Amino acid sequence: MTERDGPHGFAPFRALRQALSSYLQGASSLSKESIMKKFRTLTLAAAAIALFSGALASNAASPGACSTCFKKYQACMANGGNYYTCYEQYETCLYYAGCMVP
Image (cartoon, rainbow, N blue to C red):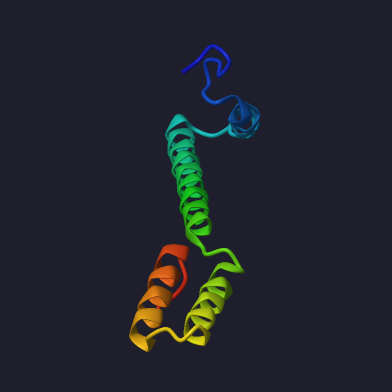
């Protein structure tokens, strides 16, 4: 923990913890602990979901990448290229661009 985080954890969650703590003033210590544990678990789950969805989005192909590969394939075939050679290059292009390979 850094000095910026303060004694109650990460700074953005401090206000939320304080509000939750003031709400639970009348509750017993056992219920406070269980609620704080659930809050912490939900916070970690939300962070994990955000990181996972960010990772999925970063691996997605750019919109024009797949069509660029097909244009290269068409150009290869139009220049008299061998079908198998052009198609192999097309598949390789799709794979490295992050597109679905047929």
